[in-house]
Length: 85
Image (cartoon, rainbow, N blue to C red; front, side, top):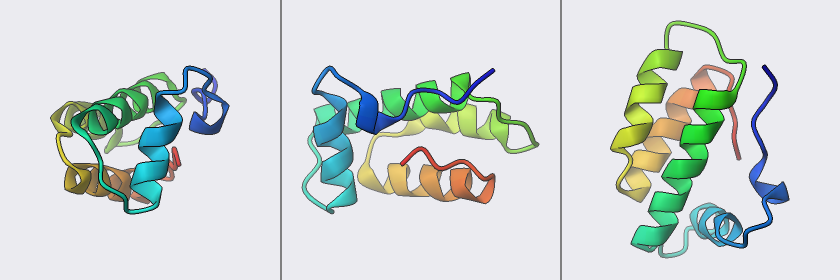
């Protein structure tokens, strides 16, 4: 298994504005949050990740509904050595 696609190479034009809003602390619309959740879901589900926190990360990605949820998820992912941004 290889690393999933990185957001900077995504070509639909939907993901980049969501990630940039997140990274720039700009307002995130419900579409931005849903897009980030989908991106993080494909990242955690399609990567070569191993360890005891991977299954909880896979479950928790489905619970992302706010910027704070994204922050929390990314914090746990970074602890596991996963940095999708």
